[in-house]
Amino acid sequence: MHPTPSSRALRVLIAGAACAVLAALPACSGTGSTHHNDEALGSEAPARPQPPKRQQGASVLPGMPPVLDPQDAYAADRPGRLSPVVKDFPSRVYVPNTNSNTVTVIDPKTYKVVETVPVGRQPQHVVPSWDLRTLWVNNDLGNSLTPIDPRTGKAGKPVDVHDPYNLYFTPDGKYAVVMASKDRQLVFRDAHTMKTVKAVPVTCGGVNHADFSMDGRYFIVSCEFSGELLKVDTARMEVVGRQKLDVHGAMPQDVKMSPDGKRFYIADMVADGLWILDGDTFAKPAFLHTGKGAHGLYVSRDSRQMYVSNRGEGTISVFDFTKGKLTAKWRLPQGGSPDMGGVSADGTVLWLSGRYNAEVYAIDTRTGKQIARIKVGSGPHGLAVYPQPGRYSLGHTGIFR
Image 1 (spheres, rainbow, N blue to C red):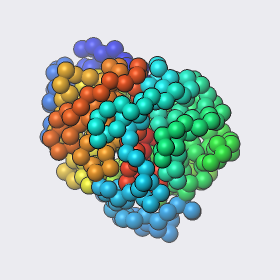
Image 2: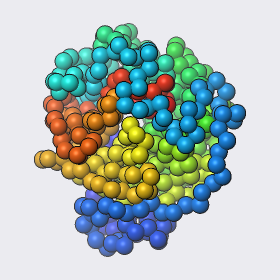
Image 3: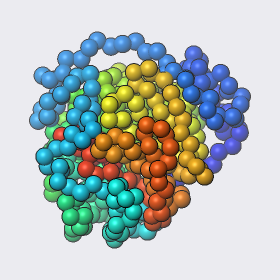
Image 4: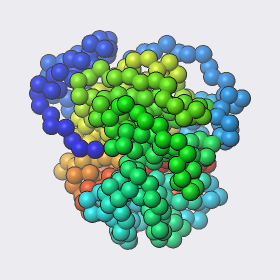
């Protein structure tokens, strides 16, 4: 969402608050300094007790596809492993421009814009449907969803949905979950007709992003305006946990589960890093600094790494799941505002929107070098790379399992 002005005093306060929670965190050793450029490189996530190994299969959400690998939630997302549903779809990058009320369509082979599609007012994200057949454009202020046929790239008739800031799908494919930020609701809707099934009021401000547990029985939601996290029971459609993050002005953004399902990572645009949460216990999370304005989270095709877009400083941090630490930081030439996006089907390119620069970045995941910088409309946000590998979509800009 909107950037928060930064100052030396604010950063010192944030760093101090984070260190008070996790005094042992290596990145906190320089609390009094405002020089954060590369200090997190090599920083390790705090050690956490290992819970008993999960028994997946029998306890998953009824109707959910079976877990392929209990140690890797992203096992279906390997390079080129496209579902038969999408294997003939043309490869495209769909960029919603919030200020232009359009979706820019890019051919990733040529890095050229091939079409501009008019949509509703303030499109925020382009979201693949659970069954992979439709891309839904979230027209937040237009109170509608515009369907795009990924086979043809053509937009269909908008569907009336109030306040669709973001959109997710339950792992059983039954419901869409609308993040109705201004309405302060999580709205469960029929995944195909978008008719309301249950509207769940929330007391936090700015429901925003989410991800589901390995077994699909709960999901974690970020509340960006009140600095809170929610835990929601999927089957009961009820909030079962709520906690306030221990940084003044915390602004949690994207949420992503670790491959083994034991942790959730939540980017925080004000705390400038990642909250590391045990979703099962929902205990207070640990914290790891990545960079100014940490915003989007994307898992590599081999499930070993996660790319963190630091929107406030024009960088991407690389977190290694197997090592439990940051291993690299990539800088965009001439800076930028890397926001939301996704990884190419073959895993070699990370695509990110430049939220405040009216551009899109293509980054080589092997070297961290910028491949292309493409001009698009004003306010590009929840960019979707499509198609991608996976059996089904949990929503957002593409969470595939």
